[in-house]
Every structure is written in C-alpha cells, then in structure tokens.
Length: 169
Image (cartoon, rainbow, N blue to C red; front, side, top):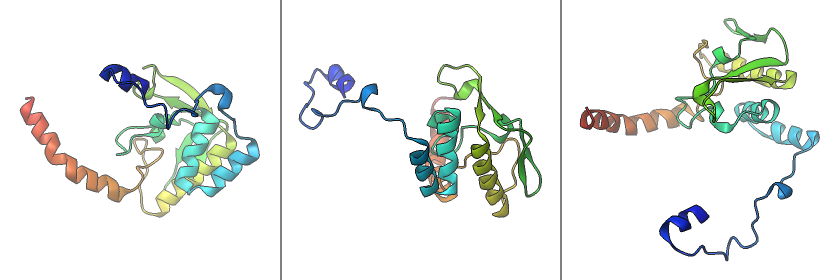
C-alpha cells in the first residue's frame, strides 16, 4: 500500500490499516498440535501443500502456479519411486530438489520432506493414480486446483497467446 501511494503521490489512508502491524513480533508459529489440526482439516491435495511448506520450507510459488504450468515435478523428488499404482519413498526424510527456475534467488537448492510429509504425498499420488492419472517424472507434485478451471482458463487465454505471438513476431 505504501509503495502504491508513494508512486502516485497520494497520502495513504491510515483509517482501515491503523491497527494492522505486520511484524515478526506479531507472528506466531503454530504448535505441532495446531499444525496437525490445520493439516487434517484440509483436503488431501491441500494437506500436501501445507506439509510441503511447513516441513520442507518451500514457498507456495515453488509448488506451482494457479494454472499448473510451473512448480515442482515428481522428478524433483529423487527418493520417490512410482509404479503403476503405488508410490514409495526409498528413504525418509526425502530429498527435494528445487530447480533454479522456481527459486526466488534463481539458484537450485535442496531441502527435505519429513516422513509424515512423505506419507501424505504418497497417499495423494496414489489417489491420483486411482483416478486414472498416469504419473511420470514430468508430472506436477501438486496439480492445479481443478482441471476444469485450468481448461476453462486455457480456453480463454489460448486465442490471446496466438495474438500476442503474432503481434510480436
């Protein structure tokens, strides 16, 4: 807000934001029990997202974009082995390689996923396979929110992609 107002030269409206102070001192790290309640209240997909962020420290952007066209891929989890209908981790905690393209600092780094996180991820991947998805090393670790939203958005955006490409050669 301050950056926006600084660019326009307007004075920031302090009324609604007067008592809001986003500081580290106001932050509270959830206890193990609080985190467990959050995780168990979530869908299986969202559970995996929460655990990946909480246990391995990745940012939401590392998990993927809204459209699902970026984000961690199963190949970024070298300890994960996928069979026709099962997913297994060879060891835990499991290695997670974050490619430079997903890193805020533009360099590859590694982190780890806890045994609990591996269990949730295994369950999620196996549910995707039961639903008919064929998983490969290029498959996203976390799918876009819904395939329907993705296909609708692609249908809306595709004509514009061609227009932009045509206009810019």
